Image 1 (cartoon, rainbow, N blue to C red):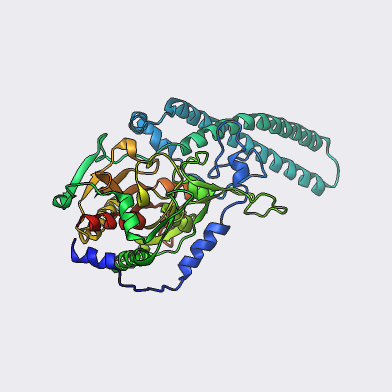
Image 2 (image 1 turned 90 degrees about the vertical axis):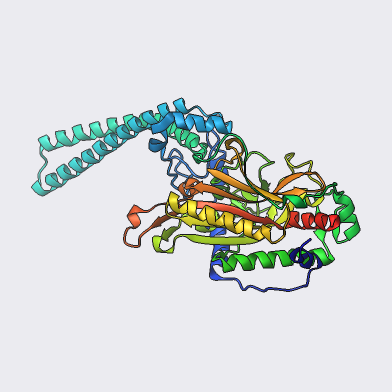
Length: 484
């Protein structure tokens, strides 16, 4: 074990108090107050497909959305076979032919809707002009009366036709938009259908024998596992100090590399959660908070859905939603540190102890740029920073590029840093960098523009990264300390 690791394990206690900045407070206020209290009603309202808080048609005037989803279907459907191949590689089943048919029909219905609305407006203007003319003449003219009557009759007929037309229009629009929202991001050209190992370091340090993770926990005496289950825990003594040390060192390195800290909330409303592609009906994807039983008076919070996630890409999306960023401020590099909450699903059941807890401490980063090229540069910088952090610990790790089937809906490309775990004799992801393009920004109206050209704003491009899972890292350091 090198000097850095030994120092971290012994843990000399140092504290670092950071005052709350204006941006930190704004993030909390923005996530709490900026979204409509009708999300829950919207989410359950559609009779065709499951509803969405990111799109609501005008069918029900009492329900609205604060967001205008930029579906970009015209560009996506130009290369329909590429889109189908994307779905195939990801293992998704979406009927693109039906979507194309709906989109073409929607354009026709929209054009017809505008034509009828324009006709009604023209008729209303003509009637108003005739009434004015009739008043100016000071006498009733039968010819004017007949014209007004004929125009009024024509206007009523158009109104009736428009009402019938809108029923089909709303059906097609809702089906098209909700299907468009379920589409995944594009896939980077460098991504294949098999996992690719990009780099391996310190492979000579892989222990020749396995370590019993629970024995390590019991011997150290600084981890209290709950009697309710092994997924609940708290740290004591030197490991509590070690957690603070790891956080402080990582955050110091991030600030030195030009990252700005953001203090984020732990709970998020529906639009933010939807924007990254979470399945809100799947309890294994994210925690959903329910109203307190016996609540007598409901508040705006009770009318909406709230989800518990903590430090994650949602932290940055909540802050930047519906924001137009000046081009001169790009690229932006942000980071946040805090608790992360993971539902009790079956994906990591085989991982022991601290590697499979329901809440952990994570450091997340986000990069925002104005172009795809700038995004690739940010991703390269994030990967370099990630490897520089783990080189200090001299633990056997590898960089891997995930296959298309392992990407989330918002990811175009994902690079993971995986460390060898002695207790299970396999690699485990502890850090990652994901290229996400403008997937979430098109949903949450996060845009960039010059100050004098706000009308020409465009969605930003984003890179998200998980620099370290502190809780897993503590478990790894304990195991490697045991092997040494």
